[in-house]
Amino acid sequence: MQYDYELFVIGAGSGGVRAARLAAKAGAKVVIAEQVQVGGTCVLRGCVPKKLLVYGSEFGQAFRDAKGFGWTVDWARFDWSILRDHVQAEVNRLSGLYIKNLDGAGVEVIDDRAIIVDPHTVRFTASGKQITAERILVAAGGHTSRPADIPGQELGITSTDAFTLDALPASIVIAGGGYIALEFANIFSGLGVETTLVYRGERILRGFDHDIRAHVQADMQRTGIHIMCGSTITGIAPLAENRKLVTLSNTMRLETDHVLWAIGREPNTNGMGLEAAGVRLTARGAVAVDEFSRSSAPSIWAIGDVTDRINLTPVAIREAVAFVETEFMGRPTAFDHADVASAVFSRPAVGSVGYTEEQAREKLGKIRVFRTAFRPMKNILAGNEQRTLMKLIVAAESDRVVGVHIAGPESPDLIQLAAIAIKAGLTKAQWDATCAVHPTAAEELVLMGEPISHDNEAPA
Ligand code: NDP
Image 1 (cartoon, rainbow, N blue to C red):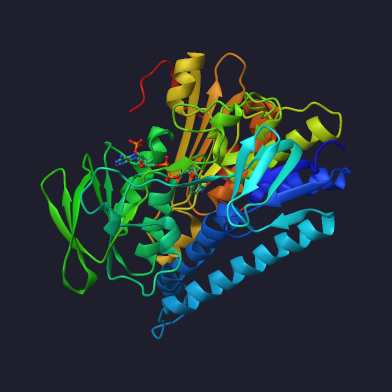
Image 2 (image 1 turned 30 degrees about the horizontal axis):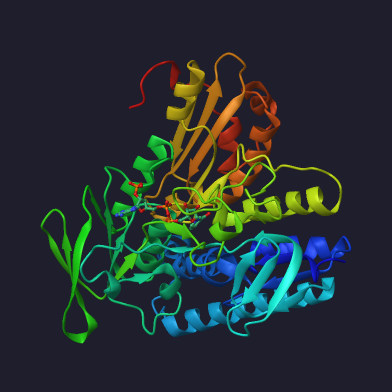
């Protein structure tokens, strides 16, 4: 062989690891480089530890709910260090499993930062060693953004830091109104931290269906989270005992223990030698790729968050599988990015797939909208006011269900199943022909009889 390896993968996150393992199993000689720890964002500082913290944060409400069912749990106490350490132990266990699986597939793992020297050569920054590969796959992921121009921004933390805090703060101010901001606002609030969300827009969760946004915002406020819309943080100054003084664009000032930046993520492309190797970057600094994840350099591909397409773990994995099928199995495959469902693990949680009401009106014109809101059975005895909202968007002409949006307990699990029906293009009549499972919240999805709006009626 002309090169040392057939495939060099940069970044051992969910996408990179899957590509490396599958290519090695297909018979290729593969090496993967990781500069931090095998596992990547999802396993080490994203989805997995976040969901474990969400579970931990839900017990407080569960203990309150339990009273209506005859239980008394007045002795309940929370210890942050126990939850934090258990979560870290679990993510380290998973990282170990990833390494074991790579070894098992015959992939060589190198713990070093890799820089591209030319379209077939990579250099390691610590060892200085250079190796060559027929193909290079960039799966370097992304990192949390910080505002460049806000005085004292360095006093704030990011979601990465939040997992390993020495102590649970008494108060926190979170900047942003997207996935990470909402998930951490509900985690901290659920653990008893006084939580304030500062969001620059009019309503949180931009891009989601308008009813879902209103429902989630109102319910988070009901549970005691302060949400300040239409404002941004303009400065952070240090106070005694590690507290911070936060200044907002609306001239308000808040004293807090921590400020958490949750204002988006950026692709990890800086200083990687990509442009010099002929790889074109987008305006946001992501690797520009075609539907086969090919960059503008013929021997370099990219998958996952570094390409800034849909920044979700399962998407990175499907892009990895498609890459290996195309390049190592002789089956040209492009992952279809349409109708990818997503979930926000807030309280209430959100599950969403397909068009929002606004998108459907714009793209399809005539639509029918079905909506139901109800208090889940469990919450009635519990005396818990949280309600569930479900919405179906139907294309009037074809009767196809083109969007499903749910805010409520278990909605991330429900939306996975709804996504099958959306991807399969099932009609509302087929949803209705499906018999309900009783008593469940999910049964409402097949029991929505009358539309709340027809045609081009404007959303409320
Ligand atoms: P999001 O894009 O979801 O949210 C970013 C938020 O920050 C938005 O509310 C945005 O406002 C706001 N914002 C952006 N720039 C500024 C600024 N300069 N000043 C003030 N506010 C600003 O990003 P996240 O960081 O929450 O998450 C990154 C990505 O990671 C997500 O898009 C998602 O793809 C993925 N993710 C997925 C999760 C899941 O599947 N459950 C969980 C966590 C992350 P505006 O709306 O006005 O643009």
